[in-house]
Amino acid sequence: MTRIVKDVVIIGAGAAGLMCAIEAGGRGRSVVVLDHAGRIGNKIRVSGGGHCNFTNTNAGFEHYLSNNPHFCRSALARFTPRDFMALVTAHGIRHFEKKLGQMFCLGSAGQIVEMLIALCRKARAELVPGCQGIRVSRNRSFIVETAGMAYEAESLVIATGGLSMRNLGATGFGYDIARQFKLRVTPLRPALTPFRFRKEDIARYGSLSGVSFDAIVHCGGKNFHESVLFTHRGLSGPAMLQVSSYWKEGDSLRVDLLPGIDFPGILQEKSRGKIHLATLLSRFLPKRFALKWCDLFMPSRPLCQFSQKELAQINVGLHEWIILPAGLEGFEVAEVTMGGVDTNELSSKTLEARSVPGLYFIGEVLDVTGQLGGFNLQWAWSSGFTAGQYA
Ligand SMILES: Cc1cc2nc3c(=O)[nH]c(=O)nc-3n(C[C@H](O)[C@H](O)[C@H](O)COP(=O)(O)OP(=O)(O)OC[C@H]3O[C@@H](n4cnc5c(N)ncnc54)[C@H](O)[C@@H]3O)c2cc1C
Image (cartoon, rainbow, N blue to C red; front, side, top):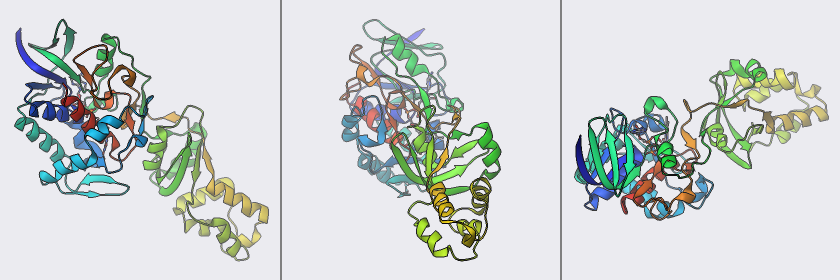
């Protein structure tokens, strides 16, 4: 079998792997990036609904979940959202802030992949898609074998991402490599994923599929003010995806259906009038949901017919709608994997394994999970860049 000697082999040509290749190649290291997918950067291409929410200008450690929440600080400081935006601007990719610091491409996400591929070319990093059956071993250097080819390198970077969306090329390869080298992997679970209703809630709310509204969702000591979407099977939308990362089995979701609205004041003002509760509620919530809420919790009639006690109940019910989910949707729809290679195993400065010199882990494969809104790609860029400075 032909054996090619390189300085750095990177496995995984996604966001983190490509950024690492650009930085390491730019330092004059000879780099090859291997990926089993036939096309480079599949996840980037579908990210942000096809427009790639490529960073968040507020990316700080407080937007990431990890057993060691401070681990990501060093890499995030080394390559910041501003740095990535400078690259995007220099490549003429038009972009805009959607909300809350979330930066998106005006055109297609493919532009980001094209930019990364062009930068890899400039850095003389070789990209090899379609590599099946990759195996890794180590004597003094790392040996990476694929069908028909072997590479030898002093640095090996694992950038194979998480488990979410196998159809886009996700595998557990990175976790297997960590275990092969006796590095701990924290428990893995889907995150940034919708909730599933219990059977009785499917019967109650299943017909509302497609209805969305603005709300504050509380769970696990966190709350997010964004939109919520009913699906056939449960609840989705940005607010629900965000809290899914903080949810534990048995936790309820507490939802303020009328955030920032002084509903007690409005109820009092209208309490002598003939307006029906459902009609009043429809001014603040989608009509279908307003009708359903009344059906389930307080049959609609003219407001003047409600007692003060009932008005108080209506108010509490709307500001504290409680849902006990059956669980989370799985890796097939989750945006990211929570958990991963234990950060205690790595240097936060270099992302190199403490016990295996020359072995680096970057991106989503690590136990660093961003909130929704461009934080996960920023972690991929920052960690890829950082490892690229040392690998
Ligand atoms: C639908 C969707 C939309 C998203 N939108 C956004 C967004 O807008 N903004 C944001 O910040 N984050 C978003 N994310 C999350 C973000 O895409 C990931 O966190 C990020 O891509 C992780 O980068 P990575 O380089 O670590 O892994 P990936 O980008 O997943 O790259 C891993 C690479 O490794 C390859 N690979 C895997 N296993 C093997 C193997 N056995 N052998 C060889 N190669 C292998 C894969 O083919 C892939 O190319 C989204 C995720 C999904 C699923």
